[in-house]
Each structure stands twice: as C-alpha cells, then as structure tokens.
Image 1 (cartoon, one colour):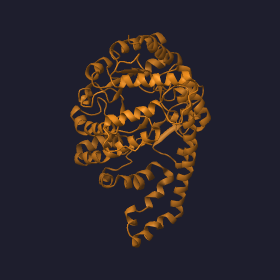
Image 2 (cartoon, one colour):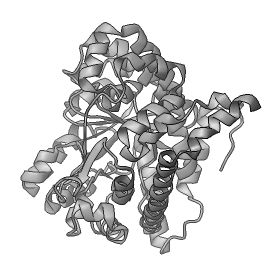
Image 3 (cartoon, rainbow, N blue to C red):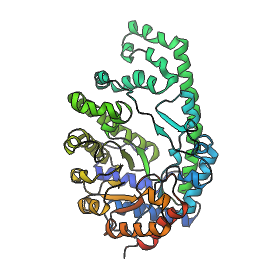
Image 4 (cartoon, helix red, strand yellow):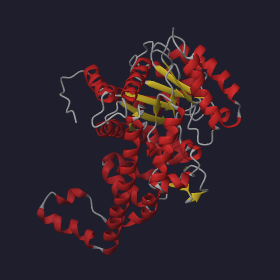
Length: 444
C-alpha cells in the first residue's frame, strides 16, 4: 500500500493510482493477448474519463444480477453458493467482452445476513422471491430526536443505537456503555460488565459467525474478480461511498422522516450532513486502499428531479456531496457518480466540479442535453434503458446506441452502459449494445 505524503498533489496521487490500476499487483495474465487487452481497456477508459479521444467508446457492463440469470442460476443461488456466483460472473465477462465490469461482490453473503437477522433489507429467498433482487425496508431507524446523538458521536450512534435496530441478533449492543468510560481505571471495571452478560456475548458470537461466513464469500469474490482481470477485463470501482444526504434519507430517517426534517429540523439536518461528510470521504479512500482501483462509485438516490425543489437541492443535497467529490479528487481518486432517476434540473448545478475528474452515469436524463451542459467538464455514461434491454429487440437497442454515440459520444468523454442495473435484460440485447458500440463507436 502506498502511503501518500501530504506534499503530493492530487494529480500526482491520481497518476500513482492509475499506475497501480494499469499494472495490478499479484496479477498473472492468462496470455500476452489478455495483458494487452487489459491495458488497452484501461487506456480507453482513462482517455474517456479525462476528456481525451480514445480509440473508441468504452463499454461498462453494469450488470446487477444479470450475470446470474444469464448463467441459469437464481439471485438466491448467487448469494448462497459462492462457487456458482464465481462461475456466473466469469461466464458473463468472457462471453460478452465489455471493456470494464462491476465486481461479483454485488451478490452479498446471504448466510451472514441470516445469522445477524438483518432487517434493513429483504433478499432473494429471504423476504423476496428467489429470482428477484434485494429490497430495502424503509423505516425510521434513527428517530427525529436522535440528531443530537448522531452529531455528537457518529461512531457511538451507529454501534449502540443503529446496529441493534437493523440486526436483530445485535439488539444486546444497546446495553454497552460508551467507550469514553475506559479513560480511567476507576471507570473501566463498570464499562466491562456488559461484555460478561450472556445476551451480549451471544451477540458477539453472532458477529463472529457472520464474519466467518463473510470471509468465505470474500475469498470467492476475490478469486473470481482476479480471474476476470487475468483474462484481460478491468473491474470498475475500487470503492463505494454515498452522498451525506442519502446516508440520512435512505436508511436512517427514511423518505418520510427526511422530508419532514427539511422543514422542521433544518439546522440539525445541515449540521448532521456536515458531520457525515468527512466520514463519507474516508469511506471512499479506505475502499480504494484495499482494492487499488481509483474509481469510487457513488449512487445518488434522493437527489433526483421531483424529490425536492431546486432550492432544497442547493441547500441540503449538493453542498456536502460536492465536498465529498472534492475530497475524493484531492486524494487522487475519480468519483463515478450514478445519478439515478432524472437529473434534468440538476445539470447546471453539478457543473461546479473540477474538469475531467469525474464520471456521471445518467439514468433517465436527456443525454444530448447532459453532453451540452457537462461535455467539457465531465465524462458522462449511460443510458440505454433497462426497459429497452428487457423488452426490446436487438435492432431497437442498436438504434438507441447509435443516437447515444452520435450525441453523447461526440468527441469522446462518453462511456456506453445501461441506465441502471440490468437484472432481467435479454442476453441478445446486451450483446447487441456491446457489439454495436465496438463497431460503430470507433473514433477516426
């Protein structure tokens, strides 16, 4: 792991990160051809990101559970049988030949979630049908009156309040004392008492068991991802983080709670967002230090058109998201921002970012307008509709891709991909998107 010196510029850090991504440690390519293909794909993607002209439009396979369905297994199989998970994701990469892939880690360890009695989500075979993806269960996992606790000490809030609410097996963590009680010997004895209680020990045993299962999953994912890379296909992001507003709105306060807070608790909401901002930067940096890939994936949920007014977006959403983006760029990373839903009314606002330092993947946004507004500032990606990939024909997919290349792909700065994850797409349509882009998306 490289330990950066404070004197290094963001540009120098980014260059070091690109070198690591270009020549990944411990990778033994399956052939000279695979190594060359890997390097070509990295260069193609880098040129697009940095608004230089690549040899052709790069293609990102944002596949969700498509790989499982394509391989003839269910999403439940992928989350519980790690050998089947690995085989499916490798088959997907080798059969379709996109330029860059998402990790097989999207299919989490189902048994680990069961051990902890995970209540924040339902997943295939555990609350949803075996052939469906997972679903978030919205609720107020943080009460309105608990803003003060979150602001005062986020780590303590998550450990002793939030975790016991989303994991049934960890409810006894509510009985633990704040760690500040260890500052003097006179207080430490009382601090240790809860750890001797049978229910607390049972909670820690559940954590250990879930951790052991997660290690099995992680080992399988790592082997799968390494084999995909060794076959010549880069993986996209090395890390993930969130917009601070979404941390609160998605799984702490929930949609209803956060909408009320924007009117009734504005000051506390803004203070909490500022408190969460450095944590989200650190989350993105820490993930990159493990994976050694410079792109940081940031899915945006509650910032889409229609959820809040333009003024609310400028007040509550964008300021801290911009700080997260800037903080990641300063660490030599590239935010890969997935603007879910439509972002038509946000395009002028999000112009305020460093040039050639981010990727914006759009879902329902007009890509011609996105190119017009952001084309000289950021690389854009998208937005073949998942409805088209799921119900259309290969010719219809090709027509849509042609329009994207002619508009969003003009003069570079564009990555071809679906508008969102493609769990149930037709294989022939995914293949049409990839093969047509390789043929038509060449820059002369």
